[in-house]
Length: 324
Image 1 (cartoon, rainbow, N blue to C red):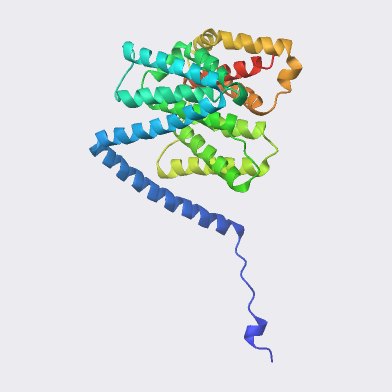
Image 2: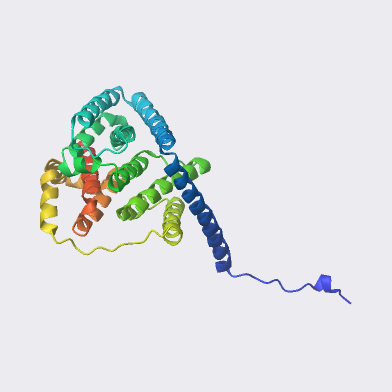
């Protein structure tokens, strides 16, 4: 007679959704811990503002030094032009009474970091073109108004440019560890940008449409970003606001055309004279095209997209004219 051990009992097959549920439970637990840690850190920073400012300033300067050193290694011309931008920024910062300054040293460090990131929107072999990208964006009065105040809009713009810079420069090499690290880094910056301003949700969609062949990478990137957004929404209480079309749509569109007239002329000229090349673009240029096409209609809904679109159009116009 066969024993019960030999016969065995039928195994219970757990449905796949239970595994997803357990993973989501882990995410929620980590989110709650992160929330408590964030609240404790925030309270500590409120009690020690002087120390907090020094720590933030040191971190910003460290990141800036790394980016500037890499800029120097890639292009001496770009490095010299960036030094010119630094000098002009410092003169503008200290001689203008238009800035709303709360933390002077941090604000200046963010301005310098922001201008350096703009150079990374240019092609790697032509970093000096970043000077033109920054110059075209800086010519917009709305752009200058945003960077004059250290607030949520300016911070979201910094993370937006940092996210674009990552997409413009990361190789997403086949090496597993490096590729995973780059995707995770891009997801973090995208998530922070989305947390600061919801228009950044267009970035993952534009990324997937531009680079459709890397299915695994795209899936991980989108899932990490969406999971983070849901966690922010559920745990930190960051809601999704839907805005109706702005009452001054015509005025906003007219002002945008006026402030980006040079960029628009360059883009129209390139499409007119090199139409086949323009529609056949791939990679980063196509990404900027897709993102611009997404943001143009949204500009009529939410004017906060104005400044990010100025940056996208500026980078796109320079990258296109480089190919002439």
